[in-house]
Length: 120
Image (cartoon, rainbow, N blue to C red; front, side):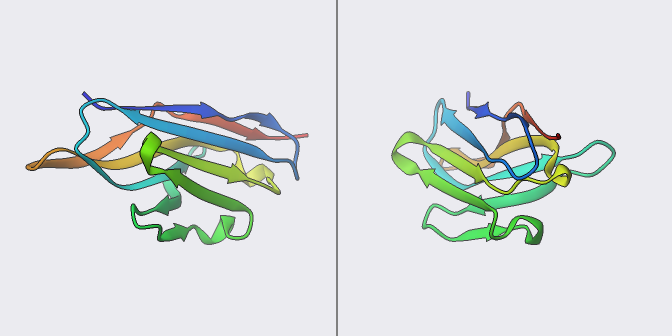
């Protein structure tokens, strides 16, 4: 069984910084993309940032230049450094990973979500 466990998040003032971490564990053959999504109240879940296992990244336009995604393949972990936070960044942030548990089974897994609140 595969688990994604997130840590980080919390309350921060506008302009502040937070970092999120996510570690995958369980019966893992390989991990492809790892990334972060978020869902604000009343809105659909949206992509924040993704990093492939060969180092390519993709960011939502709204976070470019402020957020940085990184990855440690040896630790099966992905991180999100969030700077210059705005009130509109307030959301539940979810870790996502595309994981192969065997040669015939590759699927998306999700973390439990962590709340990020940007408020003065």
